[in-house]
Image (cartoon, rainbow, N blue to C red):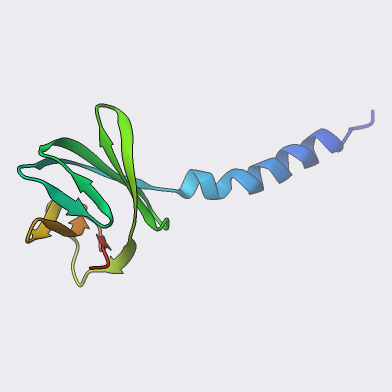
Length: 111
């Protein structure tokens, strides 16, 4: 009896390619803008939004009504302690940082 090794080799190679996809982590936080606010280069009106970012990526998606309304450049920064709660920090109607509960990384926006 002879085993054909090609299907096993192909499956193994495919699994190595997809491993980084399995490890990707997406963070998301609901957010309510009370007044017109700037997130990076995007301007949003008062309303309910979902802010979503994939670990290691340099962009944040602003979602409203299930649709991406803006993709904003950002950078991840290291926190000294894990964030106790998810929160969106603002200053003068500009989002400056987004923290995700239990994470030691936060999203920072260039001002």
